[in-house]
Image (cartoon, helix red, strand yellow):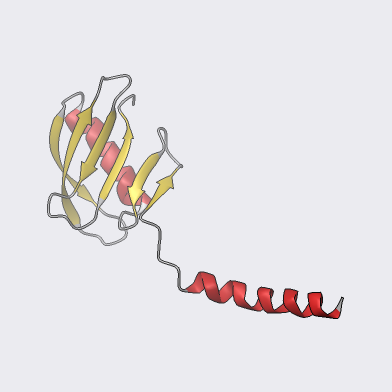
Amino acid sequence: MHKYLIGAVVIAALAPAAGAGAATPAAHWCRQGDPPLYASADTTCGLAGNVITDYVNVCHELRNCQIRVDSPASRMRYPITCSRRGGRYTGRVYCRDPADTGIWTGFSALI
């Protein structure tokens, strides 16, 4: 019993250290809107939300569109290129910074 208790204490002590060096995820979900947005680790949910808002207001139903989007976190304006793949009701929209800064987001074309 003593051997198992020591083993459990060692595992518990190492668990936080193992997670501390883990890489950040490549992408995350922003679920406060409808539809939910899938965004890169470099894209805040505030920026992703502004992308979909500007896409709806400027691009309407265009397959390809360029917009300029404000980031609430960095207070910068980014040029964003959006493209819709698939149908209006079943497709997906992908928007990214053409300068390859790592900023991108994707969402359902049914908006």
